[in-house]
Length: 617
Image 1 (spheres, one colour):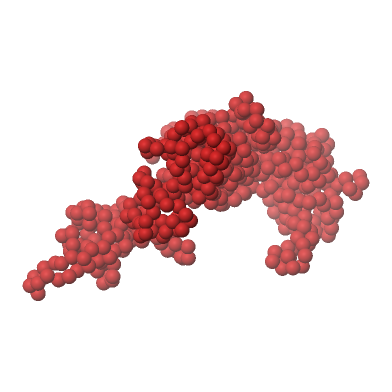
Image 2 (cartoon, rainbow, N blue to C red):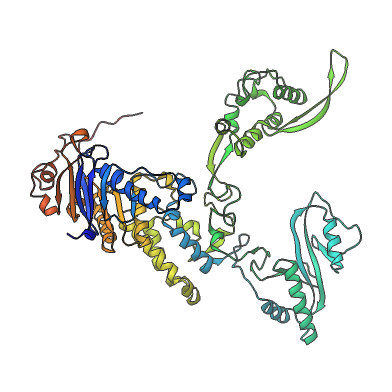
């Protein structure tokens, strides 16, 4: 055997390994087996993988290593022929709520690209297909549709926002414009013009007023006005024929032809819940949020405020909060000793969500009206503010969470995305609907997708579709057909997370790597074992070495080489009992060989399959 054809381990003494020497063939599927605690993981992970990691860290500069810390050299004399090592262990890939099956496998990245390049936009108000125009198209459309009519060209500046906008009107006047349209009415810009600051307003600049005729001068003037309106209106403009009030909208970007709402040009980040461009602003892209539950603040309405009926504040104390509660009680005509169920509802609203008031109350002792006031933040508001505060202790955050419920985000309904992102569709599916499909159903949709795209969109999307199909097939091959791409990574079992990483590594197409896996068949149905084994063989066939710590009989029989460690567990293990191809191992007289060749079997319990009596809880 040539040196470059195997990994040679000399003098391994990690944990219970007894100074063992062995040669592991490269570019083969190798199974390390033996009793639990015999030293399998000590050899695979704590010796071979640990040495590979240490050598990788040593390639960094001294400056970089000071931030990483030095890894201890495993207790081994020498390891030769070691390739770059990747360990795929049984542990959840990420605890982050932003990590999903789609993001781990990068399939979601390709879906985002697909929707950004081949998606069709629809208005979230009317459901109409969004349109976009070039300046020349707008010019020709106006000349065709409004020939012989007098029109106003307007640029939108304010949409449904409050304010008096006096400074805005002054700024518009200084730019040379003399008219604006305020809430549907065209007005002259005069000194001191302003609107009601407490009402929402729509304000547009009247850029030009002209009669549409097929003349060169009119055409030139209209084109200049279109460009000016687009610049002032951020790529959107309005046209209103004389004696009409209903505007016609035009936009360089995607725009609803009826309401005029516009979408910016879609980018992959527009569909990412991990980017401010795509994440739902209400839940910040998490799909769920914590909200205060009033029933947790007031769990027992038979108690009074003084008895601790408002649980976060407990029983009556001489502090500012109870002084405020006393003023609220005085204002709303109840006592702090009354059961909460008898307190007026408007007073409960003030206690929970805050309020302020100044009032006079007649004092019997002083025989006169006394001025009272309160400015109370509200218990629910305080809890919510405490939970969302950035610089706050963990204990306070935990305290606030006691009075909150974890619910589906009411804005995005758990999709994590902005409203706009959910109104881009491919084959009548938005991106959220696709990631909620199980892997098999999604594969069928993607496979059929080319039949539902136009020739121009298919030309753009063809390579993206191929990549998505390939990665979905890898997940199918490792038996994960029941998952969906929206499944949170922290909800995955260790076996599922491990098989997802196997699928990801297959997709990365790395060559010359040593993969070490920890019992990847755990939790798999027997029918999926063959799919998993074939996936590992594929990794081997493209030029990688595979070491699997495993007890599964099918995996061992399918291996190229078996290393049996034993004979027992703990201090009585750590020795190489036998090694070689499966057909040679079967001829041995070891415990492993006897189970593999059928001489020994695990007895099935006599009561297996019996129906147990029902237990009612």
